[in-house]
Amino acid sequence: MSKLLYITANPKVDSKLSKGAQIGEVFLEEFKKIQPDVEIEHMHLYSMDIPEIDMDLLYGRAKLSFMGYTKDQLSEDERTKLEKMHALAERFIAADYYVFVTPIWNLGAPPILKSFMDCMFLHGKTFTNTENGPKGLLTGRKALHIQTRGGIYSTGPLVEFEMGDRYLRKALEFLGFELMDTVYAEGLDHYPKQIPEIMAAAKEKAADAAREMAKAIVTI
Image 1 (cartoon, helix red, strand yellow):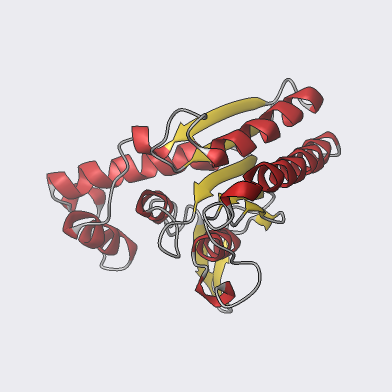
Image 2: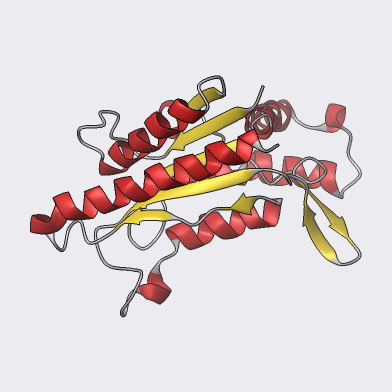
């Protein structure tokens, strides 16, 4: 059975408060119409215990990757935190299709998303090094990013300052993912009177993306 991992990175749990969640719900509703049997797991990052790269994880990973240490030679804190990181990565790897729902904050993604993605960069598990450089091991997986933006980043002076969607796409590309076009709703803070139209357009694009992803599952 195929599995879709639905990942939200916003402290607003109530979808009435989160425009990103509202767009994401449209995606899920449309997706389920076509693929009712696909397992869907929701990871709400703000309700999870996500390891952050600190001194223990920094040195623990290095010791196992290239310093010649065995797992038994790690300190208890290093071993415990690495085990938590690997367990989270295993949950991530177990899916076939991925949807990330995030806002843009201060030009980038919420910091918890970066902490989450840091846990996915594990040599030998999600990527490896070759003569031609690093190679992602998570191939054959499809990913979509749904992003809400207060300002306008698709055109104009802020194009080069958008680092949230750009970071996530590059990180997933590095790991081997096939990426769908990002669904975004922008100008939500700058044009409050246009929010209904902005949201309607984003929801329509999310529904289209859901149908595209769902049909891709049929053809596998």
